[in-house]
Image (cartoon, rainbow, N blue to C red; front, side):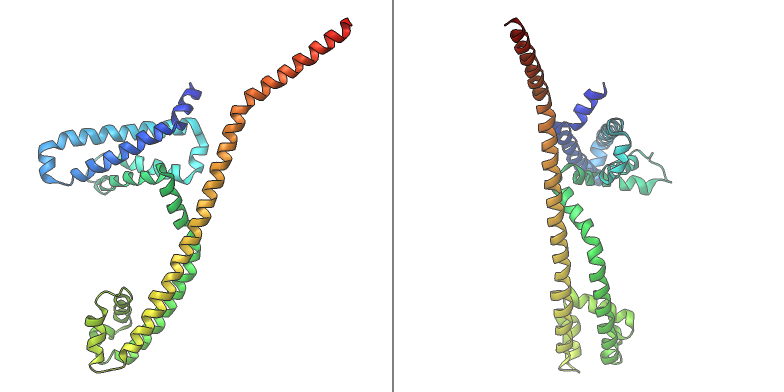
Length: 269
């Protein structure tokens, strides 16, 4: 019984069925946000949603039965368990927020699609490296924010009157969204060479430091991709070994039979 259940759980077709149900469920959850659709098909959509949730419950339960404690050692499996657990929380006023979080089950696509899992794994692996870059950006922001308050805070208090306002203004400048007309041009009417300060800030933060983020993420994703390939290769070797094991056993038994026949024939002669 357990062997049959393991075969079903580990079957690639099971993953494809779950992935299809996740996509369908994402569509139904989106349709439930429409008052017109809910007025016409609300009960049907809710029934369909409940059926899919219980399919997810059965699938996760089967994986726990098959893998037992190994299931809870895998972070992705724990993620699936939490998402499905949130989905079965009863709809009430107390748990209304958790009900809204049912859309999180769409994120189960990450655990089903290997390429998405590799991308997210790369991002998570890049977090330690990002910490140093975030610290560097905060130091640069602080330096430029203090300088901006000193230079332009008196004449433009709405932009650089306080350190907090200076941080926010410099953030909008870094995003390159309306920084010329909204920030630089008004300041340049009184300080013609103010453009130099903002150009240096943009070059240092946007074009240099933020590119470090990209480098760290790309490097982490490359390592994650190599890790996934190594695991797939190891899994393929295990499959080949399992498939070859009966053949090797047959060969050994044949060798033993041939050796016995030789002994028997040698004894007769």
